[in-house]
Image 1 (cartoon, rainbow, N blue to C red):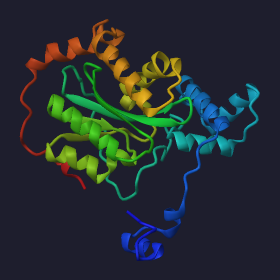
Image 2 (cartoon, rainbow, N blue to C red):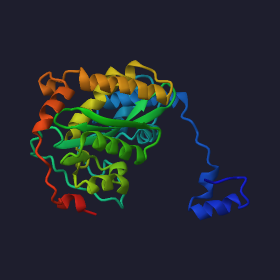
Image 3 (tube, rainbow, N blue to C red):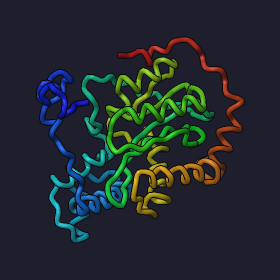
Image 4 (tube, one colour):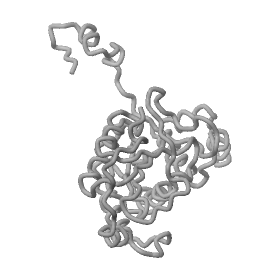
Length: 286
């Protein structure tokens, strides 16, 4: 939007657009190969030991011969958007101005498709660089309804995934997410509010609140991502397209009594009740 050839000075253009002049001149610095290798290893350790914080991860890396300090580990964890999973205050970094909704799944039996959907984000390593993956999953059938990848942690790719799932499969009764700023953004919440879908959010540090998506991340990474060295984002998209087709259409799940997600989802779908059109007070919270 800012042109160096324009008659207005760059400083004035930045003022009119409401952006800082420094951001105009900033050139992104690529992550070096050493840090990319460390991030890949941290991702593996986090999947294996989700309770490990920066101190433990530092010590684990040191036992493997990696000389690294805790602050460097914390910096890489922030870049990867991962935190140690255990019950303590303020583990999820959310936007202070964004609303937070209660967790509605506690004690709720989810036994039919389109009753509850879950959405979450994870980090994916590449041969050089990394991307973020968001999925929308049906809780009862474990079917991956939609997904998107993005090089940045913005809300737009999360909104796109949600809108695709709604367009293809209709509206669920409830959507559950964590309290990350991507899911508490006005853009994401307004999509749910317009369709009068109840909004549920995980408690702080409660990994069990979204356990099925956490299991999906382990499957995606060990069965697809770690077996390949994606060179480009196009390679990532092609690999995930192939894997999610396998996951939905061929992969048996023990939690589904060895049935396949598509079979469970489409077999039970005709029996779904028509969602009530009445407004839900939980989705109108501001």
